[in-house]
Image (tube, rainbow, N blue to C red; front, side, top):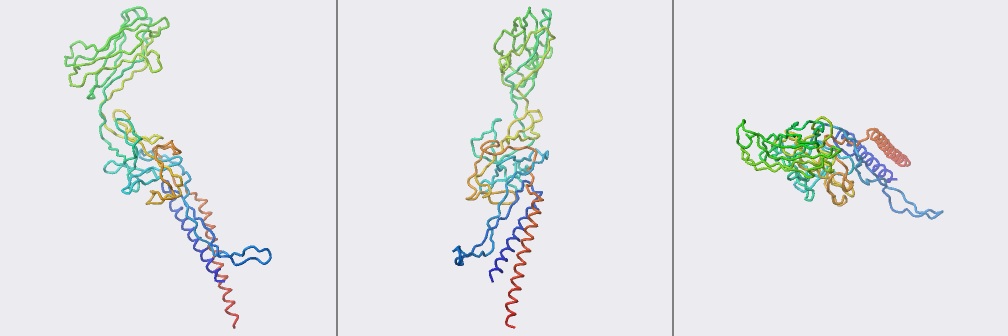
Amino acid sequence: MFTSFYSALTGLNMNAMSINVIGNNLANINTTAFKSSKANFAELVGGSGGVAAGNGNPVQIGLGSTVAGVVPVFNQGSIQYTGRPTDVAISGNGFFVLSTEAGYAYTRAGNFGLNASGELVNADGFKVAGYLAANGVVNTSVPPAPITIELATSLPPQKSSNVSITANLDNKAAVDSKFSTAVQIFDSVGSPHTVSFTFTKSGPSEWGWSATIPATATGGRASDPAVEIGTGTFTFNSLGILSSPTQDADLTISGLANGAADMTIKFSLIDPTGNPRFTGFAAASSVSSVTQDGFASSVLRDISIDNRGVIRGIYDSGQVAPLAQLALANFANVEGLVKLTGSTFTTSPTSGEPSIGVGGTGGRGIIQGSALELSNVDIAQEFTNLIIAQRGYQANSRVISATDEIYMEAINLKR
């Protein structure tokens, strides 16, 4: 009869533990990327009490219940847009990789920020690790390292190496008619220069062109003639398509007054698909697009993060350059991860080793910038579980009360 006391006592303890787990879930209903847990119980089975007289089946009386584990539920939480550039969420599998003194740690909570040293850190103060960029190229072949983003740092200038103009030169124009346009380029120290292109009709379906820069760029006076840096002739076929030349031209600039390096700029006449950029149709001469690949030095003012986790710097000049890429880790058994502190986990023998890479590869999810994953706690489910645990506790307390009454009846037999 003592068994019923202890069996009911284990029931009280297990249901109390279940209420503790539910309480922790509800307490973290608004915690970023929190994963709810569920308490699993198992029966305590005593030894065999013999066999049944009729059929020979074993007679076994249980001894109550015990904890079979408190299992985290890694279901996807809802994703909410925040607008903060350093906030990130994972849609799918995976964990952000963190750098700690003891090695890597992992988290789903992407409410990151910058510390006083410009290091990207999570809410628990650990450094966010990823793949760093050099010269605008992210290297994913090396182990993830802490990411540093220093706002107000300067992007070095890039001298112009390519210029393209897409335009139509009017076939109806009279001989010696002129059409002009200008392109701003940048030298090796980031100083801008204006290149003027002048197109002169020299005959039926034929236009000459020349490119010049102001004389002041090479140390001359403002009143001096412009310095010619390139010249050529366009010939169009009967359909108004450029037939000659069939290769790009070069613009050569030397002796710049500010000491910048000499420049050779490719003047692109053919687009990447093999089509000429200039046409000679019977329509007004006009420019539809102008491009060049140089830029001045500028200051980093903001960042953005794309769905592959690439962190791009946004500069005052409008330039956008990769700074780093967030690393994601996946595990064979995510339920085997051990909570380190707050929202941070570490590995255990049962979790397996991490598979680290970039988002969207190897079964890892994609990343959403300026957003956070919310807690996956289902309040309706937790309230239901709370009622069940409460009733379980009450029922086990009744077993203890009933057993106590039976003992009292046995004691009263001698009266």
